[in-house]
Image (tube, rainbow, N blue to C red; front, top):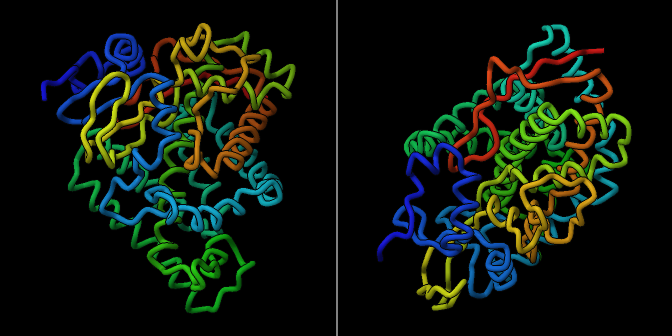
Length: 383
């Protein structure tokens, strides 16, 4: 089949957001040799999300619990996952998250007013809160930071050999943590990792492979998406003094503001599906077994779903926002992520008088398959 576009072109690499906006208007369901079918329009994405029998989440040869499962297999595993992000659990973790945020910012303030957000702040925050939430030791902070940095570099270079090696390294870390708890007879209420080891499905306990898959998914998601989100939020506020002032005056707006900022610049590039049968999407005919790439960046900037879609409006209705997905696979960790980012941004606003971009050192954008910023140099006025 002839390609409708070249995702590897200089134009796309230079500015993904602008390129995907253009594709959404020109060819909303587009085929390419490297990505299969890319879907850019909000309505077409919603069709996919609400038709899981046709658009399967089973896209990898590796076990992925529950992300890579379809009903009915998906349902009992999803029911195990959801309580870990209940209001009670999230609320209990908030003071820990607040302490981590405050301590990290205090440490950073000693180093001076110039801060590179991604390497100095966002990645450290993501690693510390992930370890704290799962009950992992602080001795893993540095190894996970190195792993995340190497994984990001390999992702940018699309180095499949390096990515495979790094996946095995993360597997080894997670497997060791499970083995440690198994050997010492960890109780269900010891920490989140131990709790997963006591969960049951179909009348049996989760296997080590299933537990490992869940923990890998949570860890990769947290380290990548939370870090990218923090970079996007700080970049926007550093570049928009009026919005920064609004949030300093009224913290009640913060949750809605974060969702809206991240709608306009989504921290997650895309998710995949596979067609289970011939179907139509956006006027295009798709065969069974086709790869389908949901482009969150373009769908969340669709003018047919959002008036003045490229503008950040703190009072915008969240109704159509696909920041955390939709349907049966909507992100179960959304309540935790929202709390973590809210607490971090509250701490940042509390401990600073202001921050702005460094004009002499422009921020640099990430490229596919990542999103957000590779670097965000800012100047901070600490209290």
